[in-house]
Length: 305
Image (cartoon, rainbow, N blue to C red; front, side):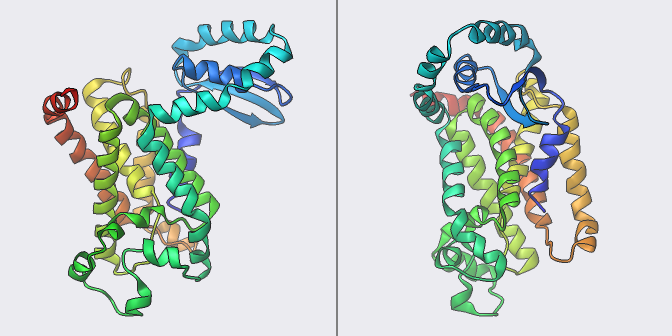
């Protein structure tokens, strides 16, 4: 259910402007690559048997429409040649955002091995990713000090890579990619990396401290950490630099409160929401952003040297 934040993102983000509505037979790959090369953020999806392209910034609409009209006049052969360069364009995109790309890759790679956990089957990889290995402890409740002293500190981070179904995975990745691109593009890979490490480690530790149950996971705590960071940066730098709508932010916060009331778990017996991880992730993101703003000059000097 924590993955619902991704669905909220899709339903409430009103900042996108629709500029193209065409048939599914049209291959927009090369046109999309050109938009990305111009740093024009957009998304393409299917709706009612049609293919839709929307921009995140309406200021780019006239440029994109003019380019699309010109692109349509090119021959299918020329478009096909352009599509050959898609891998190169994708690789450049990965190089621009290596931290986010690695995070997404690891999450997708381990997903097939963590999926059986939803059915009660503990794979070897799952036992390595959980906050402690239940095989070694059985039903025993492991004290927090033992979790820290077990010399397997990666376990404070790795529960975020556990997802219990495809919806849980894709919705969480939607939010991570949405906010992660903004953060890494504007502040760099190091900031995104350390924000991820702090948000995941602190939220996982707090979740286990409250629940004493090792069987939790997902990137939603990190997603709320990214949200907390963006909230402060948007407030300080302005919405033009951090183009996230107030409606989206308020909706995510509203559902955070709604989840905490327990009403979702009341109606769905098989759902357990890691509310502590969500709240701790949000607070961690807020604090991290304030720390970052206070030390940005020092950080910039170190990076330039």
